[in-house]
Length: 244
Image 1 (cartoon, one colour):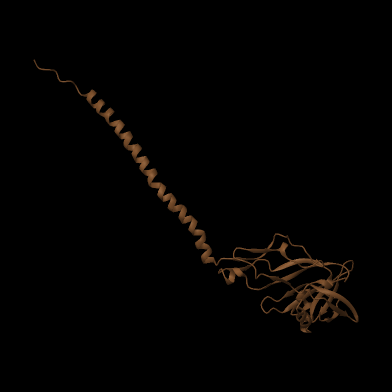
Image 2 (cartoon, rainbow, N blue to C red):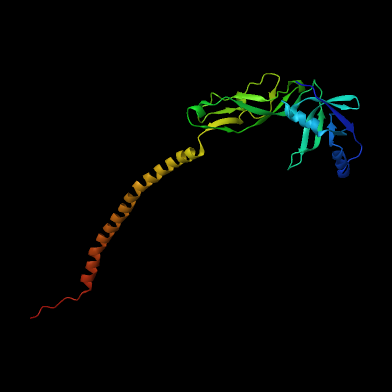
């Protein structure tokens, strides 16, 4: 791991005007936090912080802040960028003790091409891209590499399947899915539509039976009503008297 030492200045004034003056000098404001200690406002070079962010471990890099000759081992707690140009505007640091575990988020990197992509026409769906872990500062991994070459279509890999060793504790739920191999959307939509069409076809085959049955019952009812109607008509007609 490369050793970074970032020069820092203590500052007693705060506010927007002070921050503007700092930036005009090529510095950005920051704060150093530590357990059981007061927060210390500082000013640092955004170039130095940018170099740390571009390193292999990125924001999880351990480095020293040099405050007038007194060094404090820190890690980036958070930072703020200008939305349009991406320039660093602010950086907060957390002082660490090398013998005490800390909680950080580490990026996941996928390795290999899944069987489900090579041979079965699937696509990789990268669901969880970073994990929260707990470990000693010196044991923070630069990244979490995950081999997915064995994954077949419709198969997934969960947090519980990761093997990071005894020095690193994963804080995420073991059932969280990291990655799975799925069908392309067009094929998935076609597969979902196929059963629905089958059900509709089956319903269409049944429907004429119901209609026919209803029609037959109507015909029977009409036929049963016909003699009664004739009887009523016959009963209502006066009888002819026989001529003598």
